[in-house]
Amino acid sequence: MTLKEFYAAVGGDYDATLNRIPKESMVLRFVKKYADDKTYAQLTEAVKAQDWETAFRASHTLKGVAQNLGFDGLYRAAFALTEEMRGGKPLTDTALYDAVTQQQQIVLDAVRQLA
Image (cartoon, rainbow, N blue to C red):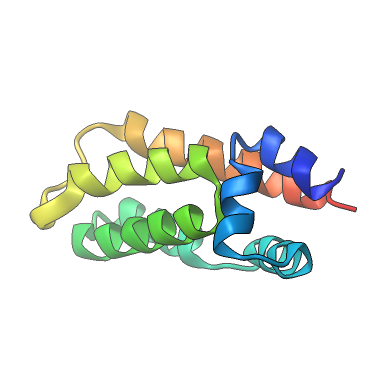
């Protein structure tokens, strides 16, 4: 899978990402490195523990990373989750967390297919 195909698979904007990070080799390096990022695991642990402050911080971080790397589907899901928990509110709509989980899996599956 090429980087352009990767962005199509994750619902991202290849061209917009290259406007932010102008070298494709650098984008590829960051995208591959994302697979080792621990933010989603932190989010999952916090949600299970009902630690809403930590869950908010993790979802906010995940949202920012996804936005910077152009993972638009993950960004939108993390944005919705972040806004739901803003101000220390407990997560009441687990579908928002489930959407983040689904988008996270899409990104990780596509990362594994990169050439």
